[in-house]
Length: 380
Image (cartoon, rainbow, N blue to C red; front, top):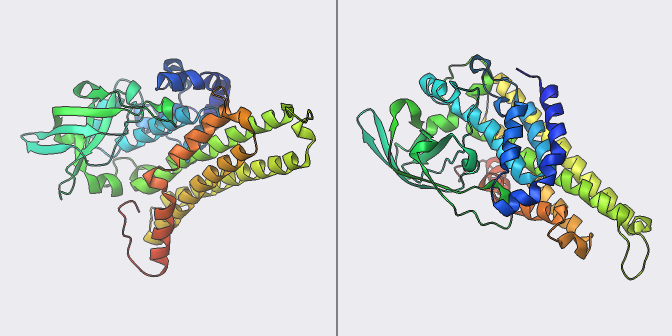
């Protein structure tokens, strides 16, 4: 077992290599094999795994800080790191028998999760038979298990924990942003899933009583997701800002011949970029701290859930606006394929379109609650 500080120190040592591989990872359209091995060896994947299974059983702040650090070097790698850490927490939603299967040989799983119930499901003796396609399988390229869902529109919609051997991967991941995540589709064809590796969508999102005493494992799905994912945005903007500051300190204007670092407008732009990055970090820290306080109190009222959603969406939108503003002041050089700034730009704009942080939905749901109306969106 390791402390949060020990994990952060290990991750910091990995960042130069992760950054150096970011372009190659994007060309390969999947996480770099060596990076995944190094993350495994560092021990960060089991950040949230219960101690009884050999994990560190740390809290949400450890996950968020690790994810943010990795994302400052490569957002695609940060996204996969967030999922591999966070999805081990999701495994703890299943039965004790299922958890022992995942954590029995090593204290973590590499588990992509897709909760949209797109699979066709049929109850059979001893369990369920599932068939179909699950999109957006972030982490599937190195997975040993997957979590998929089925039964769209049915009262018995369910979540399933499936060994990767029972699935196929369809290579469809051709994206202008977040290209190195390798988030390919997961296919199942009449795969049998025993009852102990299945639970209702409602129980997965809201959570039955956990077999673990730590309140971390009894929290609902969506507050957890914000702590898991928003660090990718803040870390990405921080990494882009560092690259921008380096470029502005070195660049010489082609026609005028003077250094950008000597121009007043550059000084203003640098201050603006750094302020946005620091604001995103501070907002992330507060968001995670408030989720942890709710976790400790085991209380997640609707007023707090819509507030968390609003704040998560705001951070994502702040980072999107930040990178877009930054790109307008860097000049044509930032659009070169070998510029990390343009990769952060593409990645942040792509990721900010994610359903969990849809800025329009986040604002609307908060506004509806404020005027006394019920939510009209399932992701609250």
